[in-house]
Each structure stands twice: as C-alpha cells, then as structure tokens.
Figure 1 (cartoon, rainbow, N blue to C red):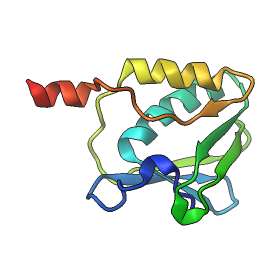
Figure 2 (cartoon, rainbow, N blue to C red):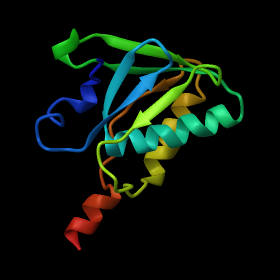
Figure 3 (tube, rainbow, N blue to C red):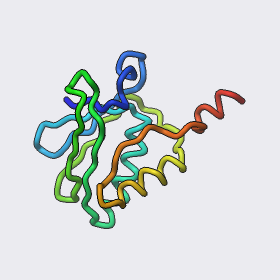
Figure 4 (cartoon, rainbow, N blue to C red):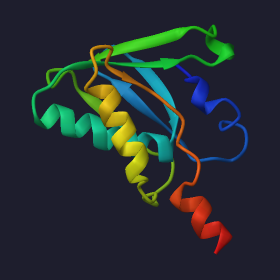
Length: 125
C-alpha cells in the first residue's frame, strides 16, 4: 500500500481515508476521501479526452519518504474506494490547480488543498 505524504496524520485522526486501486497490479494508493474526490474529477476529465499522463506524489516517511508516480491511461482500470458515503464540497480553486498540473509536461503532482477551503468557510459561519 502506498501512503502519500498528504495522508500523514490523516490515517490516525479518524479522517475518512479511501484508496485508489491501480489496474491489476495490486497497487493501492491511500488518500483522504476529500483529496480523492478532487483527484477523481481531474483524472476523469483527462481520461474522457483520452489524455494519458503521469500522476506523482511524495510518499509518507512510513513507506520510504520518497516519491511515487503512476501512468494514468484509459486502458488501465482505476477503482476509487471511498471510506465514507458523503460527497465532499468541491474546491474549484484546487481543481484548477490540479488540472493545470495534470496538463504540464511533468504530469499531475499531488498538492495539498489551498487555504480558505469551502469546509473551513462553513465552519466559521
């Protein structure tokens, strides 16, 4: 199982953590449900246009503190398994940033959600 650095701490604080199953390789990539919902939208949009790309993230120190990448292509099945049943509010700014990254020569680099998320705004209200 691969744990991106984004999930450090999230696995132990009762967050909703799901996983992306990559093809028939048995590779499981663990993400917070909120992170995964945004990734699914960006990846789905690229695959609908038949655009292949690399998707990379920094690994959690528990699995080596390195970097991992997978090749995303319409011929490789992806399965998004969410922990929770509630769909999170989508942060349009984050979607745009992830999409710009996915359209770059390096491919999509996972990044943390920008500050001022919709959920934080709701909590302050």
